[in-house]
Image (cartoon, rainbow over all chains, first blue to last red; front, side):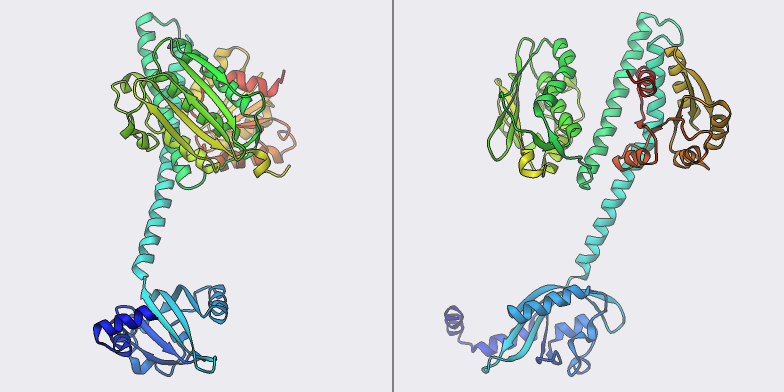
Length: 375
Length: 122
């Protein structure tokens, strides 16, 4: 109040002059009612929002503009807050004089008289109809995008099944002997259909992540088992690149709350990336640690590393670190984005540290099962 | 092992049938629609039905329902083979009584082993 007095003194204006000017010129609609919500006065902006003239509104109850669509619970909360705290802010659905609906974001303040009784209510409303329409449009677009991705991925699966199946059977000799050159060509086609299938699956996963529909089946998970199985799956890749894979897990590691398949997917992504970006005779190490609050898992390589400026971007979709190795290593640029979506959906965090030329460490945290799940 | 393959896509039907025959452990019967599949299932009493989901007229879910309602076919294990890979679709398929829900694209060299193990567990 002292500050306000100082301001008023500095401008040479009376507080009532300032408030009157705000009331008359504000772009927000202002409505003042008596304790029984009978409108005493409204400003021009409020008339413009509602479509009514001042004469039509004064003397009516404030609910003259309500559309009857706002949930009853909202009004219950509003009156509870006004009674107990003297103020409330929220969104209401209203109807203009011409019948059109509009949304207001309204702040209501209770004014007490000298006797401590309610003397008036002052509402300051902003028309947020356009914003609401945009939000609806965005929601529609998001739903359409998810449906589109799901439909496209379904439609692509049938032709991919035919191509993958034909190539697999031909290479296996189901249609007769295959010469060396033909085998090479069919093998190239087969590798690339696998890449396409991986890309479609990745896009579908990301779409599910965006919609919060990864459908995690959370159970207590023994990370040692998941790591061990994942490493076994990836031994052929490591052997092909002459990269050693070391598992350095502590003797005792608490079970984590997780979706076993999805956690395996994260580990496959991180470990296979580490192998792909490693040179021959180097080592990839998988470790874990119980920090008390969470279980920390990390995958470390001794590969080419990632530049400092690229580190924050590695989890962005379609981001691929430009190290001249991409064509050789393949990948869709979606794997780490999916890892992030999966770990975040688990309530954990994921990040990367790196030193160019010395290697990278990808780490993530998971919540211990005993903290999340009731046994 | 006698498998009834119900699949409306002729290419996929041919590939799946070829994969099973190539494996050597399977006798394969083929149907292009749910309706034709139901008739064959009643008449031939296969050991397993491999059933597509998205088919015109009678889809895989309805076909499965008919199979389970008829006492001549209700005990035959059914495996869905579908391009619909969303988790809720997988769960729906299993909740209807299918013993498994496999998604396309499938590996033609692994499919026979997977199906055989389902009916003849070690």
